[in-house]
Image (tube, rainbow, N blue to C red; front, side):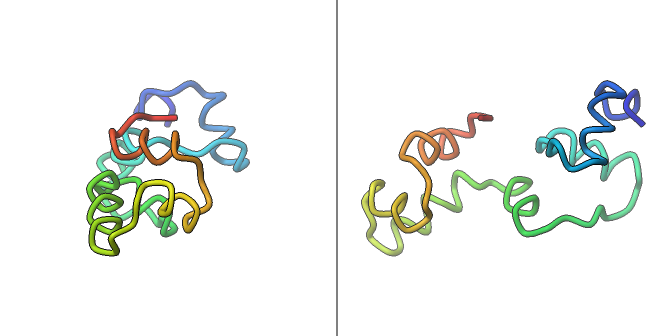
Length: 89
């Protein structure tokens, strides 16, 4: 499986043990390889989508400043900016 999704065997084991979580790229590879829908929780569904735009639209719709949105979502402004810019943390 690791070879098919371009990660090490160790990486697969970490995913299986919930010690690590696959990136958007790995999730998309899994969906492609398995040729069926991979069960994902709401966090992974969010990561697969264009979350930067989702955050921006939500913030603008609610007329929140970045620091207000971060307080509501309970994460740092750096995380928000990285997500908005689609930077993998």
